[in-house]
Image 1 (cartoon, helix red, strand yellow):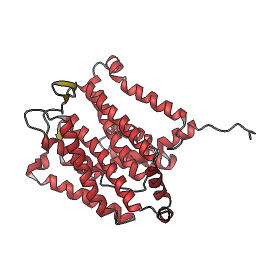
Image 2: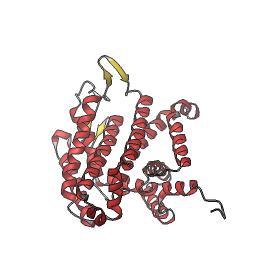
Image 3: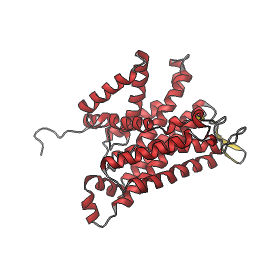
Image 4: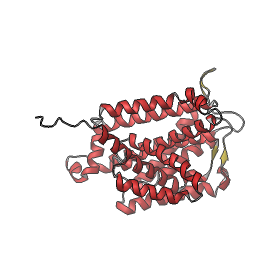
Length: 330
């Protein structure tokens, strides 16, 4: 993170431009399926935010958490629960409420689970996720197993002036893409700060960091809450996109899929999980078109990717763009 190769930054900037300009050329290339592809791209961008937030824990802190679905789903449910039934809610109210709910859950779950280590920590995060899942699955206030509908996307306005019409699919897509870029920049700044250096140091050698006078549990908890907030942002956008919140958002499989995106993209790179999210969803669509047992193909691909690309797509990109010193130079 301290020395991102220039070539990688250029490639990432080019990919961002390609995504940002898709509404301009997408309708020309895919006149019949433009809306479908735009919706799919929007969802992948949202999943990329979720995967990137998990990388803060898995790749940077060494914390393999299965609780990310809890923050993802809680924020989405908060949006559905706070929004009036027959009119849209203001983004300035709904988004802080959703992020606060995710942060509060992350603070409680993190404070309790970070007391454990290894497989016990993973199981503890899984247990809390399933507890929250069944609370919403079996509660009438959240619609039970049927979930809840959101009839209007949040409004973004100052006074009577509307800044963005999120009901427009193109505007919502660009809004989500902007959220993805902002998340990447914020997390990158965080990791290049002294806090980020300590966090990475804890992953490498927690005992040495403790001997330097730092308190690793506090740093882990802060990272856990920050990751939960960004996972909540993804959940907020997911429910806003489809206008529906159901218990599947809180299921452990949502955390598992985010973890697979991190592994495919490359842990500890931030941009790698974004590539992993695109790869995972595109392969999902490809394999699902071939057979109803697409999970078998996906599982085989993930195993092959882990064996052949242990550092993921992000690691491969870094390797290909690494500048080699001239032979005989010195």
